[in-house]
Image (cartoon, rainbow, N blue to C red; front, side, top):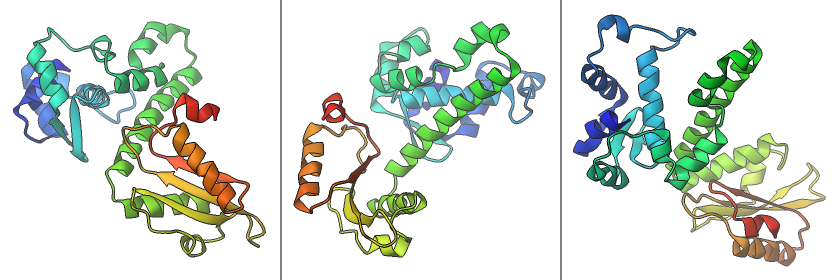
Amino acid sequence: MLPLLKFLGDSKEHTSREDIDYLAKEFELTEEERKEFLRSGAQSVFDNRVRWASTYLYKAGLIDKPRRGVWIITERGKEVLNEKPDNITSQFLIRYEEFKKFYTMSRTREEVEDERQDEFTPEEKIMSSVRIINERVKSDLLQKIINQSPEFFERLVIDLIVKMGYGGSFEELAQHLGKSRDEGLDGLIKEDLLGFDNIYLQAKRWKDSPVGRRELQSFVGALHGRGCRKGIFITTSNFTRDAIEY
């Protein structure tokens, strides 16, 4: 991870392929080593390692992904380089809350599994790998959503609610939505096709700030104000302990 961060230290955007080619030269890999593939045959071992290194640095906030397959160092990453560390490991990155949360949620990742490979059945190995991949996909999708426009988020939430069986159709549900100025959206949706019962919807496209007790209290107040008994609160962030208890 440290050689990768140093390569990105020029503050320029670099593609994943550029990262891989640079690091292959840095580690003086032979063509045979570069062509060594994972057992699945889907990717070379080295490409896979570089991808995970990028993911870890990204989760720790040391690098950013301006668009698919492109990386750039962040101010936090520059601060780390100024510390002149001997190396960067998972334990080094655990100091950052974002990485700690990601790492804790993915306890089945490679380092842990390598220690217990003999204890796993083939089925457990498969499920463990699936969980790791799913966690990365979830995180990447969330970041992608946050990077989109408020209009995209509104359409995404509408699609989600309709797919869950509410609102009847996209067009019908969309008629209930008001224009938001805080990158969230509020509206009434039908719990059933006949419209006998309504649900109040609120969504917040927040990145760094969690939804707190105050937002939930305001939400409940809005429910009472509109005579609704049920509500759905959706966020790209998370909820504080006080909000969950409330």
